[in-house]
Amino acid sequence: MTHTPKPATHEDLAKLPERTFGQIVDGELIVLPHPPLEHQHILTLLVGDLQRLGHLARGASGGWWFIHRPELRLGGDVLIPDLAGWKIERKPPTSASYATVAPDWLCEVMTPETAELDRHRKGALYAREGVPHLWLLDLRERTLEVLRLLPGDVPGYERVRLGRGDQAIRAEPLEAVELDLAEYWASAGLLLQR
Image 1: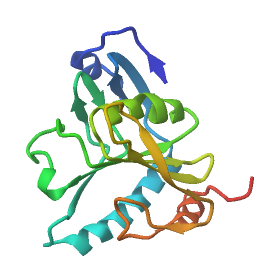
Image 2: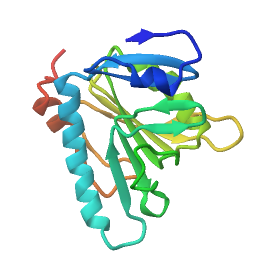
Image 3: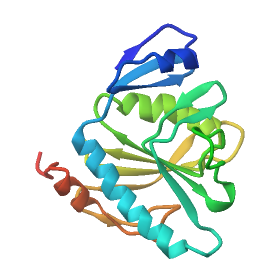
């Protein structure tokens, strides 16, 4: 992960080398390599599970619209979460190449290199923008941390659930789908032994 002096611009993002991606966090350009295959594989499993939720909700009010690695332009920041979900009635225009509407749910798959950025810096920006739910899937710790936006004027999150190891859990706001964490770790080659 590399950082550049503030303030970064959209032109800085356009100049990045191949096989990297950038985000503008608090005016700073942060450049990251594409995530490792284990990271991408767990995202694929999670997307599959969420697709089941989409099928369950199809044609009903309260459905969800999910996007893998969308570009979010929120305030002066350009953020790329691993997964984002909007309630159908709030989804951004589908003809745009980026979203300016804050999602209703986000998931970040954290690696040792991105944990601090995902949890603290981006988490604070997601709270500032009023994202009600944030999931942090930690590859090193084999956990799924479920966070809910705190009520009130000071933005922040509270932990409402922590799934560990080989649990199967249902997590807000997507309780309709059970997530088998053991399947995620085993399938990505992340053994439960330490």
